[in-house]
Length: 462
Ligand code: FAD
Ligand code: 2HG
Ligand code: ZN
Image 1 (cartoon, rainbow, N blue to C red):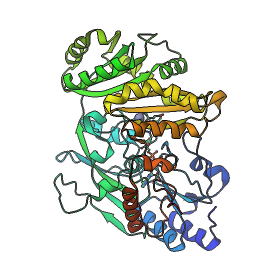
Image 2: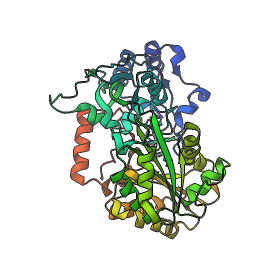
Image 3: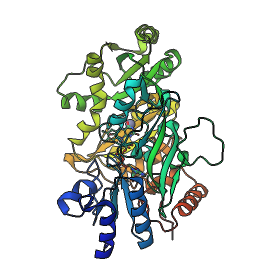
Image 4: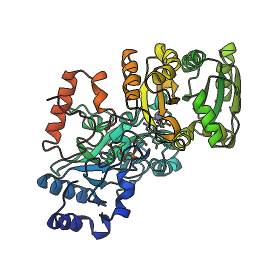
């Protein structure tokens, strides 16, 4: 673990104040274990700055002293990137929680990095505006963490991931200098797009302190439907057809068999339709005028592909359907510590992938099971592998699944990032020349390697 001597501790404490320099075991505990419980670290110190200047001062002192920092937002990341795995100091951004007034003319807003997604949503909704990314961790995940992971979520097919919402950032560089580009100009071709580079950088290049986000019209009129299918292939075909025919398509999410069984038990609610099916889609259309007919017509055109349909028009019945999708991650957590493999497949390979995964996993670990669900509209499947009796599955399972993904032309990380969990598999998607460019970018931003040293970049082969 990093050793912080008294003089250094006092310098940090002077910057943030004694109540925001935490070192007692019971106070730092929640900052050292990730959401899944799979990644557990330790830290001599958690610093909770309240302003960009405080962040800059901390980063400068740490860099001068060669002390590594792990930036942390809501600690909901799922690849182990948010916790201090080698005893680093944690830099919590949660106190940077101010929202600037909504710029109605530009349909944009500037938010501090520690603002939660739910806070951002309630800040902009009175102006009939919405944040383009939405996800189930909305009450805890922060704008800074969402940018750092380039979070995706349930509306990517309509608005894109976090990178597409980003018009500018303020960030503290590894030497403590501050860059700020928050004017929010939609057209601005003045060289490299640094916000785009920081999106998905997982804390490895700079500490994001503020962001300028593009907003979208809030679409009040919504209709959701759950569709049951007898085969995975039918669900994939229906997704393609819905994407063509529903102009106001907001989400196409999927729940496969094991995930449906698990979540229905967890929420103590029986499966609404197609109880012996293989896959269920949760489809949502959203518009300024009622999209029910549009969605209903599109579902009619699916004909025999669909075995059963349940429609939710008002907010209570929609929430009743959505809970089967949104509660899955929590339901899995009650079963043990999963290995979360968040992957994208080309549409043409999705059905084969989902069908073959149980066999691929059981060849490596006969006691392991796969719980699958995800964002089918984006080809994104969340494969959660649980070991026998609540134990973790054999590590070789990850290699088997991710190699299979790469073989089918997919991505080993769709939306959660590489973190520490997938560093050793980066070569499956990125050539050695690309990884060399990653290393060059990292060392030009952070020559001493003091920012998030455990994420993203694999160690060089000796
Ligand atoms: P943290 O977990 O604190 O950090 C994540 C990474 O970002 C770390 O590498 C950290 O060092 C870095 N970081 C954090 N803040 C900063 C900053 N200010 N500057 C620089 N680096 C920083 N993800 C999706 O993409 N789609 C989903 O649908 C989705 N659903 C989820 C549902 C649940 C129930 C949970 C628990 C997680 C889900 N996630 C999802 C994963 C997660 O990536 C997102 O919740 C979110 O993007 C992480 O935000 P955070 O503030 O918690 O970041
Ligand atoms: C989701 O889509 C999240 O709900 C979490 O990305 C996925 O738990 C998971 O594997
Ligand atoms: Zn997801």
